[in-house]
Length: 96
Image 1 (cartoon, one colour):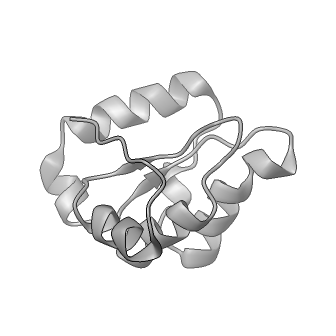
Image 2 (tube, rainbow, N blue to C red; image 1 turned 90 degrees about the horizontal axis):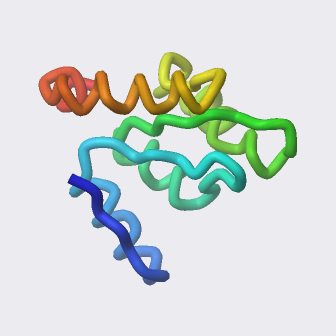
């Protein structure tokens, strides 16, 4: 199940971050504040860093938070594969 959200106030982002099983970071321009909120409430963030600095924010946040080094992928194929694996393992996500 995917949840799309419009531009919302900060309190709404934090609430939404607790209502999802995982956060799929956008590859070309990573989430910044939204990924921070997700990591802050313990929601796993899957990310795939690219060459530009704006596309490496998700991995930097994951490493700094110590909540997701294993969720940093090296390619879009790995990103998709990992997301599919985690979707099939809801117990792992809940215990993340």
